[in-house]
Length: 347
Image (tube, rainbow, N blue to C red; front, side, top):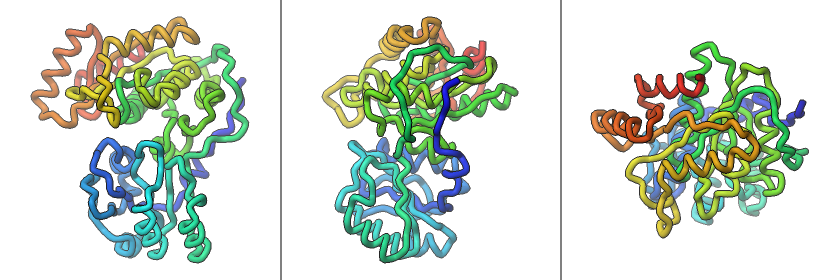
């Protein structure tokens, strides 16, 4: 049996909370998925939000300074942004220092390690604060073997970044367990790790070992156990296709669920590239997935309709289900469409 050395849930759940969510100076909501994910899936750990001048994105939480958050019981500030490249811009250093001065530790899921930034490192040492980087892969990852593993696996795949792969995986895991199915959510990104308490940040793994990390993330399991694996990027993405393919090959999913946001036509952050269609994404996922899992199938489609009113969303779910010939649902809306998707995943 494949041996795992994942960060333990106990270790990550010991992170100092509650959290103040830092939104930086971003103006694109798609880059705030860490803040949104914590707000929606760990609301009891979120005290409020804080941002820089010029930022226009909000998670809908009370706006407060680090000092105000500390007075209300916050123990750390989480960088709630996942920007291109995972960098900490100079404009964020001042607000992060302000949070440390207010008594908060700093939790980051960025690629850049906070200790590499001299001003943050020196301030943390002087003030006795912790700089906690969760985008740190475990040791001992091996090259993928492609060996079949016991248990059942579901992987969420998308037509683009930041459109619902994590939410879909979390919602399906919850639905499976509510039906008495033994299931685990397997986090593959920093936000999922903060929510679940364990996982592997796939985009921080050296490329040669990424598929091996996916094997490590979903090891051998009981025949009736489901690992529901959070997807990353897109197989068509000009920058992030590599991590998507590594997850697909290493996860060896029995089932894929394709995620899409209706109305999005261009790749997030790369507007000169058009989004692939749902049909193209299904076809490519099955073609590539058969390399390590010949029996792979698509169980359905998850649509992020958060920008639509309910009547229009339900109408679209129905028409897309008829057009594509499979279950199509918005997991956050639930209802009969989502029940059908769950049933088709478990069929």
